[in-house]
Length: 102
Image 1 (cartoon, rainbow, N blue to C red):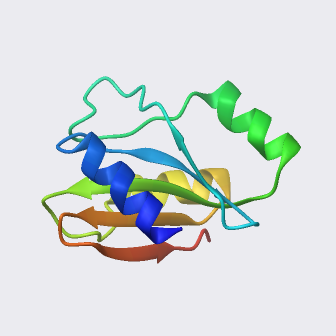
Image 2: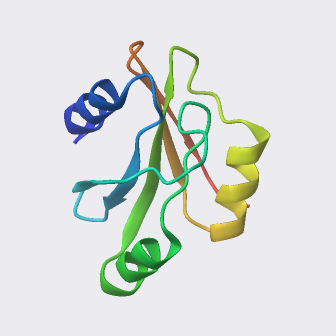
């Protein structure tokens, strides 16, 4: 699974890649619809809602290009808002962190 995530981050670099990981450890990449995709990510809320209804989401995934995988305050706030853990990867460093919602 992590190989697929890093490959997607590589393919999208220098933009932020985004997607989900299901409870079956399947990574599904989504289109990043943020206005500034080099600094942010945004998943279409209808697409995310469909997956929330039809499969169990384990993580919301996104990448940080050429920087640490540490979450920004924006990442923390959004993670808390949707109540789903975030898996943040750094590329090309290939590091990751998980942010749990509070």
